[in-house]
Length: 383
Image (cartoon, rainbow, N blue to C red; front, side, top):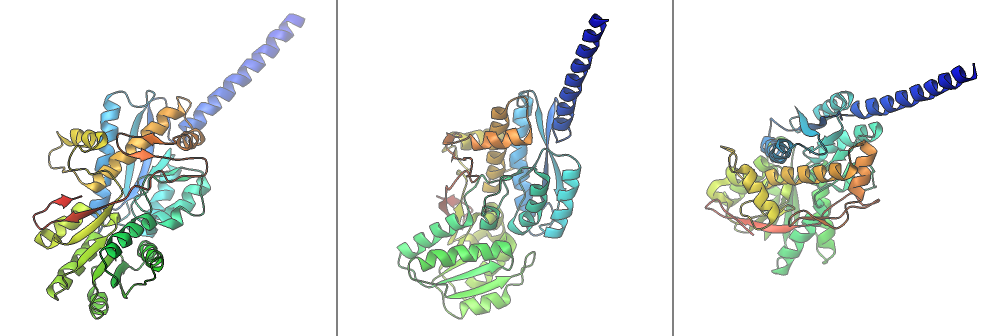
């Protein structure tokens, strides 16, 4: 009898352990992870005025993941992206985010833009889903610190500070700001105003454009009236290109300065020969030549992709994918969202082939790298 009781108790304990192990596995698999794959969710503009940003970022990330998957993935798991189109509209992005979270993605990846990311982040935070590498430098997504928001790129404050340093270094004091009338544009404007205040200046004039439009006439009239020496633009590529063309036709000969979100290649494609004198701040390695090992890897991955050309937006997707994969590798086979976040926080002073990242327990912005590039009339980008 005693022997039967011991056997029965042992069986019960073993059964409980087995159920516990099964429950843990089921929980992990229910969070976008299975034995063979990791599923990410991306809401981005695959239509509308910011289409090229969404497409190029996605293509860049796919380049890295496809090559990685062909080699067996990470710890035996392939990484896949489930994407939805939000047209760069916050309401659509929020609906997409709810759908992705309810569909049990492991993390939200590569969202494009400030207003859309601001709509999505509270949903990700409430569900405790990592919100990884949004294509935005907005301070509102960085402060206050959020455990589930993880940024690979530098902030717009970093970019606008670099722009103001460059402009004022050559003696220019009269700077106007053309900005998108939403959270993205206002963050950029705040960055410019803060940097100018530090040298005893303020914007000479302000002009706005509504998101997903190119109605710039009133902004152009307001800004040109003060005869600025330089114009900083915080907008999407179509509106910025329209403003540049019209300003040139009215005789403006100064430089235009844009932050990285404008989409360098998309802006250059829109402007053609009128790109001369346009400066764009960059937060990613130069993608057009193998100046770093990371740039070389990106160009090698593009080699057999017909119709896909190198660009900064694609490079940002490629870098985001590489950082994500490195964190997954460090998290190990027993992958959970919390283990992934812990792995990111452990990536301190890590050099990814010429692009250093430095995260920490209370530091979820990995890079402060910024450099300025100049567009030329013959379609080149000069560092």
